[in-house]
Length: 476
Image (cartoon, rainbow, N blue to C red):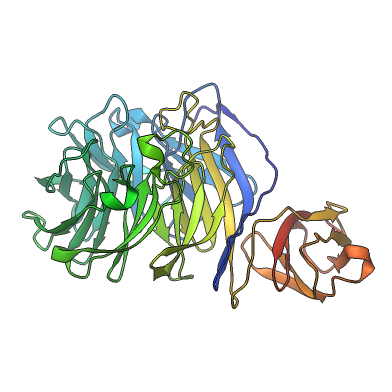
């Protein structure tokens, strides 16, 4: 693979939100940004579901780029399936079933392409083997999504609707049918952008057309069971339903560019909205100045009951799926106007990967995105009763690196007995110490001599506040 990449480093940031019960804390790990001389982006990240240390990315003009993340502080690209490998189509989305990687193909931004699907065997992620590729000139508006269930793959093909393929023989993809969800009048387009399948029911987010519930009990003859659009909740702006996740009777929907919505789909013929998180609020149809471009979504189950979605300029957002009215933001990662735009996000076994788009000419209004590539994070779920954690400054820790003990300068917000946790890059607490804030002149010391060399997060938790910083533990 031709290596035309540049690495950058940034300061460490952690965000907190006011919480009723639980709070999500994100910790920055490593990142990899593509060469800024080219308009290279990553749309969708997919952490390998076989437990191997790889992240696959749908990197549009670059194709599918695979990263080795065995060193989470230094992810590196190790394999690329170029656009040429995908029958000259851009890579836009990914799904994985065991050792098969399904790549949605066909650019849907700007000059659109044919919709397509490539299936690769990634038994050895460094040597992917093409099983089959399908695309069709009958569908020319690109492909934004792919989900796989049993013998079928479902493609979200924008204005062409949903294309269903038989993939029972991965060496011979067969077209089954195209289904066009019902259309409603809206100022933008009805685009089948997001899909989620459970049992025989397919949820389709149809851009400004809203949400559709489709029965695919017979994949050759889909039947629409219900439709819903909640435009009034975003007045005076316009909602664009991007992706969708279903847990039980609820559909969780990132809304571009307004925020986040939760709908009850227990009765598809009478879908009920239960909550909207709309912090902007949509800015009078004007995207400029809006910080939330919610797009992709993932559940952390079974590890924990948290939902994460990409938030554009807000990068990564974490929501409590158990609170629907209104939705509760549990945590966030990212600083508005920092020239980083997260298009996609994935989480698996405590590791979070955000995919960034480069957008110096602001195609994806209103954001200025200087870097395309990926960012790795880990996250911690902090539980408690009515804490009031909030965004605060980074801890000052010295010396850093440290080979023995380190001193923590306590912020004024910590004014009571507190706990110091030392957390490794996988989110595990390796050491805990309880300290009284009134001792040692606002400084606290923790012994690291029994901690292995590596990168750690130091987290200070009091009764009413929390803050954190990062330290490198040097070899003894």
